[in-house]
Length: 131
Image (tube, rainbow, N blue to C red; front, side, top):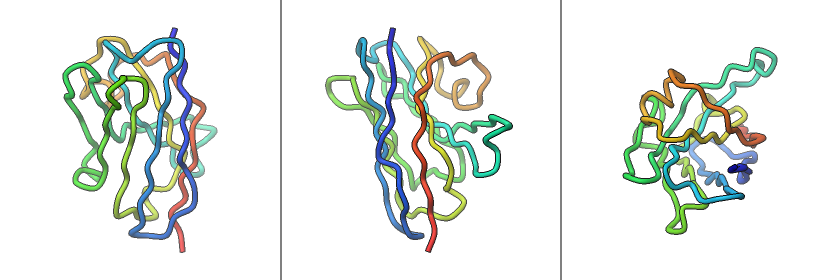
């Protein structure tokens, strides 16, 4: 069983950068796709989490939502234990709680579009982009 713990959130000014980390324990992320999902402010009770960036840890295939393409980069370390989300040129619309999730042998576009079941989630890390 893999457990996920996110870190790296915080308050940043517009056009700033943050790097989020998703550390796996229990096993490596081999054969998993890992995604970052954002829950926008005010939607906590609705539980709506939208796919931002997803990565197939084995083959490196990625999927990004249109609003972050070219600004965000998802990657994994050589040990396949930690997935990162590098976020550049942040805007207030990027604010929210970011959750890391893992799905076994899942195509990344399906995962980011929430067309597949995702059972493993981290606890989330908050990102606030504001002056």
